[in-house]
Image 1 (cartoon, rainbow, N blue to C red):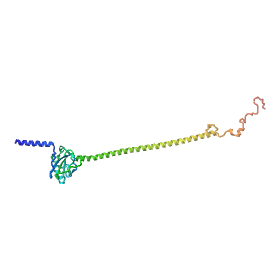
Image 2 (cartoon, rainbow, N blue to C red; image 1 turned 180 degrees about the vertical axis):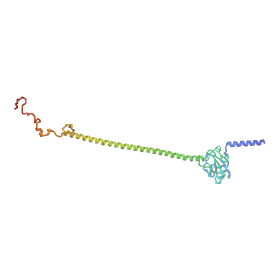
Image 3 (cartoon, rainbow, N blue to C red; image 1 turned 135 degrees about the vertical axis):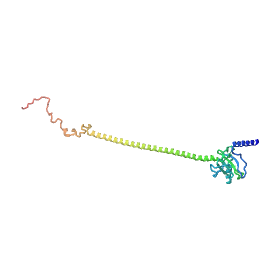
Image 4 (cartoon, rainbow, N blue to C red; image 1 turned 90 degrees about the vertical axis):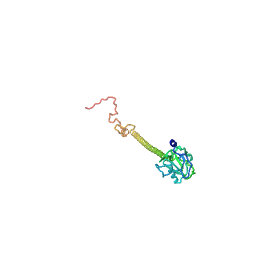
Amino acid sequence: MMSLRRITIAAVLAFASLASAGLQPSPQTPVRGSDTVKGCYKSKGELTLQSEIKEGDFNSRGKCNELCRSKNKNVAATSLDSCYCGDKYPPKADLVDDDQCTEPCPGINTEACGGLDTFSVYNSGVRVSVADSDIASSSSSASSTSTAATVPTEGAESASASSTDAASGSSNTVGIAVGVVCGILAVAGVGGAVFFFMRRRRNTEIEEEHRRNAAVNAFISGGKPPSSSGGLSMSDSRLDPVMVNRRMSDGSIADNQDYSRRILRVTNA
């Protein structure tokens, strides 16, 4: 009785030790018609996702291998609730330690269905001899993440290009506005210069005409300024022949007598 108890305790401790070491079993020798573990890989290689098992569905090593055998595929792989099938193993370079595949399968938590961006790969039993893939690809999660990340990147580039175009458009608009303002100022400056030139020319002509008129008036008036009446005397007695022959003393005391001596004149009463 005591020996049976000891055996039970040893078995429990062994199982616990195995569970603590990880859920991914060590690689096995392939057997035709039966699924065997190939190892833990960081990529899925050429394996493709099977649409029959959707996200959130029950998944396990046996269910995934059964599905791949029904499709006559040599290799099966599990990663959480996803199942992959193909004809070649992932590249040897992507093989990692078994302790990286410790994610329990949905529904059977004693089996490992990959890990963090890793895959539990199996030989489905269709063929014993299976080649390794030469294509090094990222894991399913990494691939999907990369694909998802490509769109934001392209979106970011598009947004950056749009911002650049907007900035360029704004710069062009500002440049056009500045050009229009400068053009208006230039036209206004030219118009102002023409206006002042014509005005100065007109003033010069008026001053010249005024000087000519003053010169003519001075010549006519004999160099004398205009009278206080505001007009010019157009008659000059010095130019009248009659006035020239007449003496200015006509009608005054006769100048044919000698008035230096007193003369007694007797007048009749």
